[in-house]
Length: 371
Image (tube, rainbow, N blue to C red; front, side, top):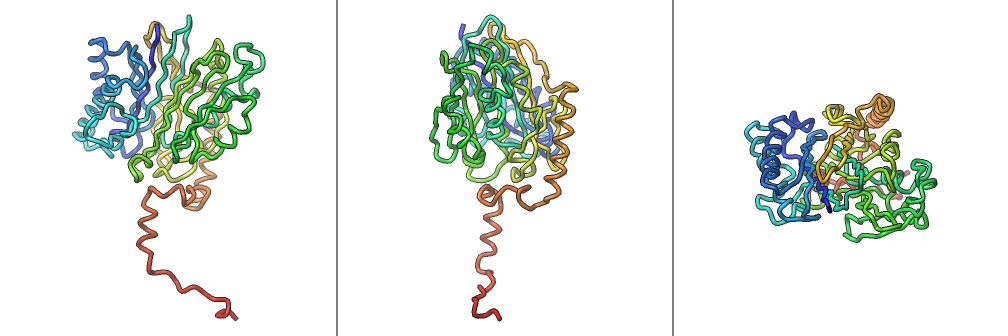
């Protein structure tokens, strides 16, 4: 049986500020998804959270981009928004950029990662959820999982992976997508995905047989709304084992903290800290940016789990290192490279400040005026 895994996320109200999700919002989403499960519209579900984002993990048989599944998610978020407004939570409904559902939540604010697969005899998947960062946060880990043999030894010693993987890369500003095979196109891949403000990996495919290996959300809220309304807080689904990287190979990139866009007001650079779900209550400067990894075994579409994979003392040291990096970046204050470069702040209030200063420029000094 073909099964679709749909992960759809949205921030519909922070508790307190942008730090967490109130339990009543989770309950509202669970009530909606349970009702849909009883109707037979979805096979199974799990409502998760990362920071102030609600993540709806659903399985069904309707394929990707299905209007009914997207409508279910939209209605769940609307139900949660109603509760958020009653509780006067911060930014209630901020990721829902329209009052009316138009058939697909893409382009309406929520982030989406979906894949349709034929279940293997054993089908482990990992759902990654990030907070206070952008879709490009997945560029480094996906490269390491599927193209770096120093991280993933299976690329060398597993015959089913030895031919490599293809990466689908989206230019978020122009809308163009590129399919880049590895290992032969490795340098081309790195040339693009190193530009994290513009290029994001959206999909990874096994070259041997075209099997989908990973999918990631690519929605950038600022490009959709035309202004800063919150960071994108991306999600990702990765298949593990038996022709794909092992669970440990998939988690390994997060054991070496790296810098991502986002953090405070979506305008700073900070370390991505791997945490358990209960640790994803952002605080320090509204961060540091967090990533949660939930592991499931699929069984005829049912979600067996989750296992909270970063809830492990092995990740205590990466968390400590991430905090040290956070200290270093905070030492810079509002100065780059702690703050994003000016071209990346075009959707914040910075253009308004520049506009206010127009006409107040200081007279330019000519060389002849200087002794």
